Image (tube, rainbow, N blue to C red; front, side, top):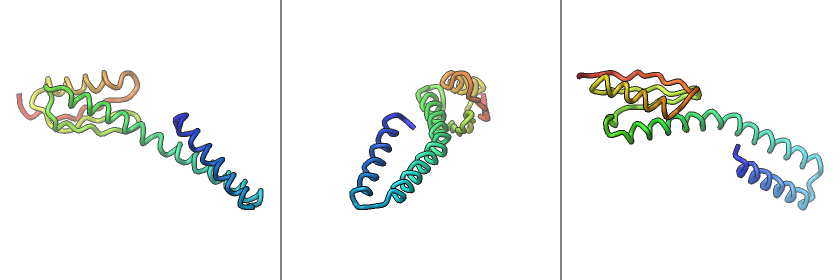
Length: 122
């Protein structure tokens, strides 16, 4: 979670706890609420991270491919946490190669690029 979001969660939690204390809640209730809130933050961090990575990888590659006027807008980018898959149809082998090159350059070292583009004619 980004530092700003973590700070907002902590401030919100502190405000919630202060409200409990002012309302006459027991220490046990406050501790239980604190534990529940921390567990919720950890769950969001654990589950959101892969989804955000997929969005980041897919979004960057899609934008880079769409920005290239030599490639058709019909190329689809399917993203996963470990890379992307290019799907759809292109007219030439050169377009297929260009799309893969753009994806690899955009992602850099690490993430995989699987090129499943079909060439429909030269």
